Image 1 (cartoon, rainbow, N blue to C red):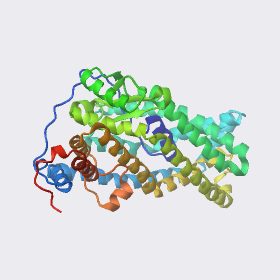
Image 2 (image 1 turned 90 degrees about the vertical axis):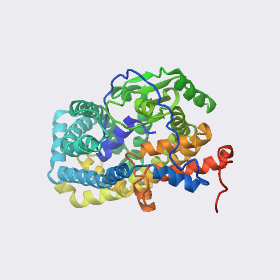
Image 3 (image 1 turned 60 degrees about the vertical axis):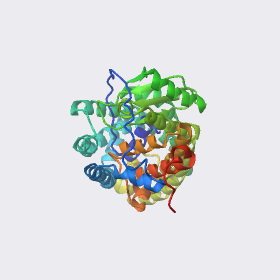
Length: 443
């Protein structure tokens, strides 16, 4: 649901590594036939039995592999935070951040350009220091678990392109932020939060048109049967689009995905070619109905509103922590105050710690919206078995049956078990004709 450029902006702030994918043209696009229901699903007498039958269809080896992959991500959250903290502390304690600031001041007398020079140097240094974990997390580990299809040369080329995007976007952001910090004085936290949210909204608007095509090739979907079915769903839900685009992701990843991205005139429906190759038409319709749910339910605006609230809280806490830290160690770090770019690593450290501790809150926000989109998709496409089948496909890299605590802390989407149960509840409630001949339900 959130565009790549918005993720780039977020990653610059918390320095979480990002995977970017290479665009290549797909020669043929078709959908696979429906494989039918797993054993036991048709004979199930209630949603609970049907859910168990779907889950039982997963081979034990695949379940062990997907659980291990997903649970490894728990540790990666910690390693990313610790790496970020280590880099920021190094920049402060070694005086490296102050030296970058001094270099920028020698290079120009214009303060907004000083912020831009500092930002560019900061991005380059952090990119180099975080590259080993980035490589492991987004290339080597993806290949180890059979998720990636891209060779190192292609992955590295996209990593360079992502770096260039950051070298363009991050100086603009820091110029705006430090201009606001200088003018706002004691209210810098409030103005800073406003500037950050404006930047996020701009990113969401321009990303589908100017940024996403740098990493993927978007081509109009030629398969009339699939295209017309998707557009029929869009028209029924008053989504102002007349084309469906295909993203050529198969040479980078085996994951299935789709989205309705952009705002206003930049709104675009796109689905990756893996979805077309691996899923039947009912499954494609169900996935696209889910994505349309995000649009119809105004999730992007609700998400921005919630993030704006969190940004205000984070900046307010950052002011307290930043002022306290500078008063105590500012002379040692050679940080003059909030208007000094040399203090940026301290802000990143604070924001990263808050984001790390707030992981359950952020995940819950997204998970609730995803569940709402699931419900919308079921009502729009009316394909509960297709919803369950797609949940199994997503289960190749998501843990299907987590504990409640795991799902609360680590899941930004409902678990596969939760999604299948919702689909089966919907099926037995809304499609009685398909279950009327089954044995009576047991209490």
